[in-house]
Image 1 (cartoon, rainbow, N blue to C red):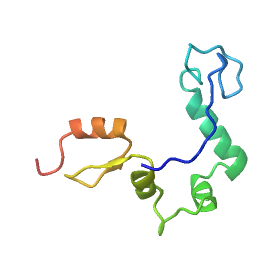
Image 2 (cartoon, rainbow, N blue to C red; image 1 turned 45 degrees about the vertical axis):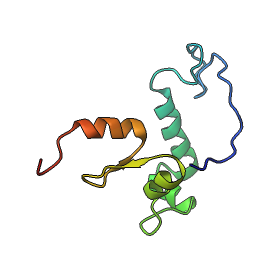
Image 3 (tube, rainbow, N blue to C red; image 1 turned 120 degrees about the vertical axis):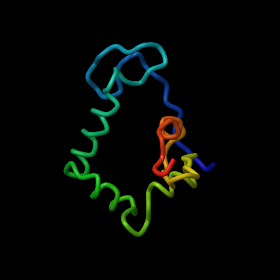
Image 4 (tube, rainbow, N blue to C red; image 1 turned 60 degrees about the vertical axis):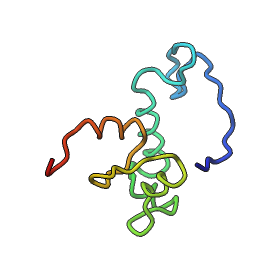
Length: 101
């Protein structure tokens, strides 16, 4: 698995979305605020469009970000149906019945 060299971030006790909320030890975000921050970033940088964000990063119909995540970020593929997801998503996926089974 290849990971980009990113700076080591240290939780500060304050939510990283910028809301000012106190968070528990070891946490970066108040509950749900990671998704709020993600949506806000996409709104600010890409006019709210995930498609625009993917295009700006070189991904799209002919260059799959999901397959890149499998190659470089440890995502997994279901042997039964081809679903690709993060390891946690894969555990949930595997609990579900597949078509034809």
